[in-house]
Length: 522
Ligand SMILES: *[C@@H]1O[C@H](CO)[C@@H](O)[C@H](O)[C@H]1NC(C)=O
Ligand SMILES: *[C@@H]1O[C@H](CO)[C@@H](O)[C@H](O)[C@H]1NC(C)=O
Ligand SMILES: *[C@@H]1O[C@H](CO)[C@@H](O)[C@H](O)[C@H]1NC(C)=O
Ligand SMILES: [Zn+2]
Image 1 (spheres, rainbow, N blue to C red):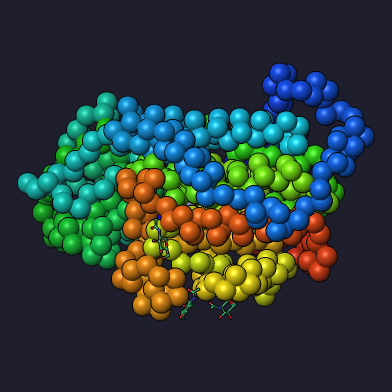
Image 2 (image 1 turned 180 degrees about the vertical axis):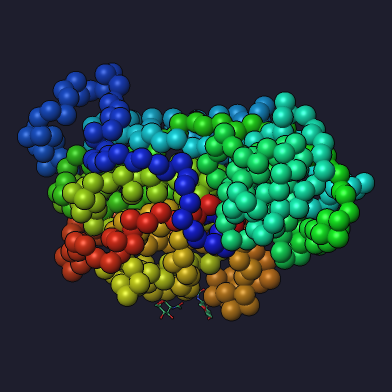
């Protein structure tokens, strides 16, 4: 699960110029190793159909019974080992995008799917992600080292990755217009107030005016963590500082005092290619698919075993167990990359669907964080009034299942914090379940689910301790069975489930890009 951004605004992320990518098979198809028993290709659909006729028809109880928490834990141990391969580069285990831990995770998912013979058509969808690493930084304002300075996300380094010196020059208004930048910004350090336009625009404005670096100060007392967005040649090294330091310096400059500064950022911005992994059943109605997914990546701070090792492993285990069955409707599995960078993989996928391909997806089910140690059984409160028709039927499927097991559940906001977001905006019904991140467990929730009131639902959310000890076995097993139930239900039939609608308002809404990253942009 990604951090909720306070603002959702139009921004140019790495998602430019998406071409019409349609069915997964047309992307980068992967085939089973030739050592597998079936030497024939997928070319004969008749032959394929007869292969499946001997399998029993999908049955929810049978699929749920095939889920064992021990099998899930064996996968978790592998995920943790993958995370450890990043130790050399990151100093600790992580499966963050761009790390060997993430690469190993992707290979494992693909190889596990390939092991299922020709049950699935497997493909990858490549997309670019821009990453930045800040190795070292410091900002000196006058005689004092700034206590609140934070380099902006995706900031370039200072020249030659060395400290630069200059006078702080107060920029007029909010620094959103070229005329706001006085002549003497050239060769000095621009001092800019937050507001009105994106941080990235201010950094570009400072760069075009010839500044060596830029400092953006908050208008609130808090620290200013933000991102500059997609890099350009005009961006300069940019810090955010809090409102307390900001006001002090701004007042000094406004009264005509001269304040010198030293800015230093040693950083690297790089563009990498990563992939979404997709697997679709060869059998079943190919025009009516139930789709589900989890995210393959984690944050840099830790191994990401609950977030979202748990969900991506649950989805993988269900994909493996499903191969014992015949299905009526196609089932499409996804493992999204770069969720933690702002839902990039799922956004890229949903935005790149042609109208025809879009219509084939009857619904998308999101499985992110299935086993939080201090869990609650959470269902996204998706309604047909606010989301594409069918979202509420899916919500009710989860409700009915928990009720049938005598388990409690809570509704949580369907607010765009995970990979369902791109689907909703593309007009596709969606929903999902979760077990909680940094929300504090209430007394009522402790009565409903056990666990400890007053503590985070996942006390290790986005931290180093999101490891093998950060999984609740009960929650993981229960929720993976529910995932199996959701797949089995729609793989059998869409009876009573709303048909896809063309040209809904949601479709129009889905065409506007929003920013969902973990950082502020304005
Ligand atoms: C669920 O969403 C509906 C529609 O937005 C709202 O009326 C209802 O209060 C929500 N329920 C909960 C428990 O949040
Ligand atoms: C459900 O919650 C109630 C309190 O609201 C509690 O008494 C009950 O034991 C809970 N059920 C389960 C199965 O935990
Ligand atoms: C998982 O949660 C259940 C219910 O709160 C609890 O009884 C159990 O001890 C937990 N298990 C672990 C390994 O934390
Ligand atoms: Zn997540």
